[in-house]
Image 1 (cartoon, helix red, strand yellow):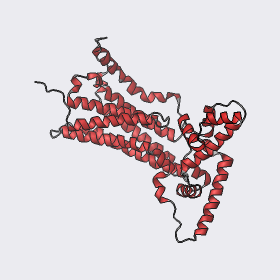
Image 2 (cartoon, helix red, strand yellow):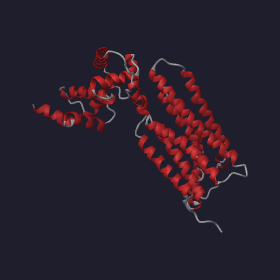
Image 3 (cartoon, one colour):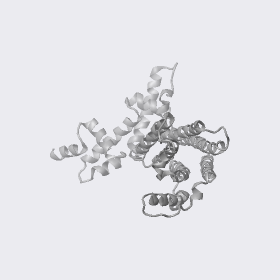
Image 4 (cartoon, one colour):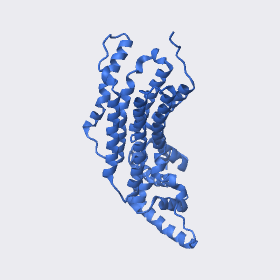
Amino acid sequence: MQSVPSLDTWTSGFLIVVAMGFFLFLMLVSNKRNRPIAFLMLAFSIILFQYVLYWTRYETIYPYFQLFPPVCYYTTGPLLYLYFLKLFKRQLKFNYALHFLPAAILLIPNLVIWTNYLGWTQHKIALLWLAQQHWFIAIHMSIYAFLFIRLLKKAGASTSEYSQVRNKWLKVLSLLYVLFILAYISYYVLINFSFFNNEWDYMISITMSGAIYAIGYFIIKQPEIFNGELYAQLFLPIKNRDETFENSLLNELYEKLTQHMEQEKPYTDNELRLVHLADQLGFSTHLLSKVINKKSGMNFNQFVNSYRLKEAMRLLSEPGDISIKCIYFEVGFNNKTTFYYAFKKKFECTPTQYRGRLMKS
């Protein structure tokens, strides 16, 4: 007698992980730079969801995702490599879409399955043998791991602090992806042994989940990494020195900073990070953070936004019919919501209301 589909503690836990994966996808997909990682989270969530269907025997009721995990596996390498190329600001060629060709090919048997179950067709499942070639998937992912490492080696050592932070960051992502590959390979090695059971299966999936969702977590923390906020407690201390000398030094550095902000207007770059500004000034991120915090009483984002708002106020005051959208993009804000929130907090009115008041006066 066939057992009834049911969830247990393990599979219920994995469903929570799947839900978290979909949440990470929604969190990340709005940011263009992080979009490849967002779809990586989505791909792995679908893989794990199909595993849960298989373990709980709900696959017999909902068989639609049986062959979909191989499609997702074939997207992981190209998606992560695309993210690497974006961080290195490499020019993407039109034929990058060819990286997703194996995944696209494996959509064919899935389409056949879906149309068969919907009763639209009764075709034999095409390319079924390819969807079952797990070692092809392992080799494909390993090739991309090699590409990540080669890209990092080509980057080499750099005196730019931004480049150093970026390279360390990408090494962490590469390591997590390699752990993911090793977990995948170990499954298809251990499955051939008699001692292999569901508990081993679950532990491997935990390892895979941990590696991939750690990537998602660090991506969310990425702004703090690149803004230097994770090192906020490591500001260069100036102990055993005269306090007047320290203030004098900070004043000098702050003057250099404000001159750079007013003359070069780096804040108009909507991807400006603390490490970028530190490189431009020749400071370390630790020192620049201390200068901004001590002399302006603001953190980095507040400091940069104060210049953006000042420039927005100037543009709103000028004659002409320049749109609000053009203004907030020109001064460095990424979106309307952030701009309106910051503007209203500072001036206690919206940009439209501010412009209206000027027109009446």
